[in-house]
Image 1: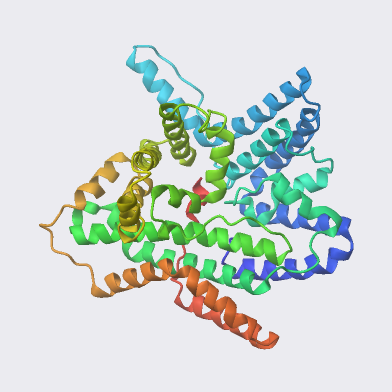
Image 2: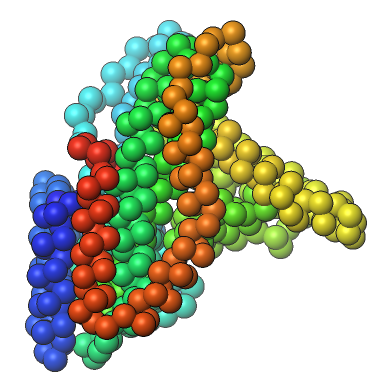
Length: 470
């Protein structure tokens, strides 16, 4: 049962009603939230409910010990918590890569080795779950807040279904206070929540799905067979696909949380309008970017060290960001690409910080075009199955000798989707204003109609969310 399906809409409608009915009884309300969250995950991946529950209980107990600061036991508890959560991530996400790499290395030096082969199934959401738990442990160690004393509240934080599968990576101090005293008593800015949900739904099941099925998947599979124009359109297409897919999920997750009375921080702030690679990363997968900054970049020294060392820190963070997405060369190159881009932009700003001419030139359309082109090219490595396929796509951008078979309608629709993404913020603001003057019954009919239109234009097969793989 995934966001955007009819099953989910029915499930969520029931959850909304019961959520607000039970608000007057805080304990029952919190038990209800925990049960529906576990039920939601069990419908998707029942095999790992016990694993996450056990890890949550252990992290909760270790958190209570960590609060006894500067004792040997608290330090041991912190280390155990990090090993527990990183260990789960390593086993499920990286063990097979490590096994193959180690065996290849030993073979290359004429040593025989045979690490145990495990047929490991990847639990959906494990990366996001692990990062939430690690942030909780680090913030306790730093004394940012007190350890949660309610195992029920902590379990809700661990399993809360809107963000469980693909974020945002919500921190404990942002979420746990919202459970106290029965939580919020009303839905904050209902019209904005509705807009966010249906725009997210539209981006995922119409725009992302259509571009994937019509253009992107076929070209990336065999770029050698397509003209430079078709390959170029596929690269632009995937640039739009991954945004519509991932921001669509985040929009729906944040909207679902708001319908239940919870406020989550935005995860995307119209990143394709950015005029520099630094601005792009301030607007793209914000919760992940902020996590990497607070729990990796700053501990490495951040900006408190020499310029050269800070540039190295940026490269380390983005190499780690690439490997977080998967233990493969093409993810590594994608992370390195962005790390190099950010480093160059920092140097550029340092050297030309007082040059108003360059600020003016690259603060406008040229800055946007440069940033968009840089990001789009980087997505080639992210989307390709391996480095060989990535290089084939790059080579395909120069295949001017092949005749283009791309239809005019595909080109036109891709352009229209691009404009929709660039003007998405203004479209959302307009829809919000329209809702404010609607009577309640018209508001309901409006969104029912929008929902029916979205499903009418959705393709017969909607691909799974891209970030379920991470």
